[in-house]
Length: 258
Image (cartoon, rainbow, N blue to C red; front, side):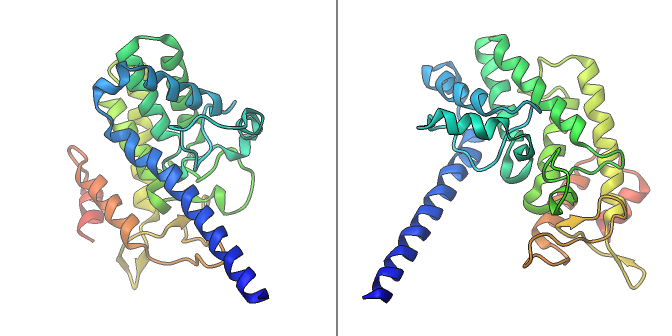
């Protein structure tokens, strides 16, 4: 009987975890696929109210939240909102919200959404290290969260967004030239970081790891089971990003071919 009870508890716990994962994944996967017509509906503004509710004082957002659902407990939501250590670019956080609010601003011309999106962009600019890398969490002061993070495409998601900003691509057509230039500078620094973190083995350039030390650029560990290792999926998306650069330098070309 005891074993049966433990099994039931374990299954229920697993189902809860899976439901939570599906919940936030629905947001990060479905939000970019929304039709433009959606942003003229009352539902779009309802979702935005939840997005704005969770935006942190840093300008960034916490991860693993399904903004399609209105929070049952707003007090708990405010606790998360004010925990600035939760601001992150992991699991599609912050970049997804900036894009959503920008699309809604274009549809409604409500300055509230524009201002929130710009605060999100300012967070991304501030979170970037001088060496060009982005940590998984900012301003979290310690732990593996501070390392330069390619894991789950965290840094590449940011650089893809900033590329659209710098090019004045929709939904960022409303941004001024000064912001576009700032985005381009951040991209240039990010590319430099990518080149510096490419792992060299036996004198030859290979690929990248999920995390790299923010000071030495060396491969770095994350959780106990995430040891330094060459990362296939993340490296593939880094290469794709580099291949899309206009007028790539000889160093970028060498990096791609390697």
